[in-house]
Length: 71
Image (tube, rainbow, N blue to C red; front, top):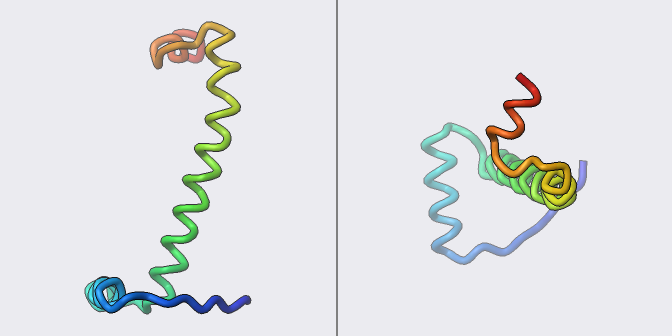
């Protein structure tokens, strides 16, 4: 497992400390989860940017278009 050192301003550190205490988790655990969620979101956005143009070209412009063909 790799180690990452970051600097937090006092306000951000206090907010993270509060979250960790409320969740009964470590700050490291919370930050790992936040990074996982952010990387998953970025992967989704990247995939969506590739899929949407192809879907639109195929005539899928709304959710209803998709539901019509998959249901």
